[in-house]
Image (cartoon, rainbow, N blue to C red; front, side, top):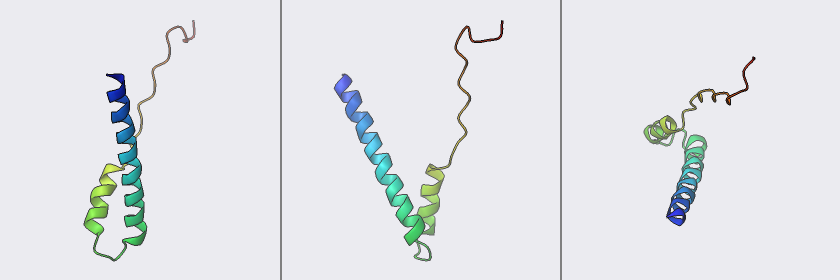
Length: 63
């Protein structure tokens, strides 16, 4: 079961890397080439989101 999870994680990583590469190429080379809609769709996938702050470990408060 662990090997399946590892394979899925590796595949997801490879897909993300390829998607970022394609997005970068479209963003730079695709200007004025009629790919604006595809670029906008991909851009919505890569919007930076603020991560919620990590909770403090127990016992690290001011006591």
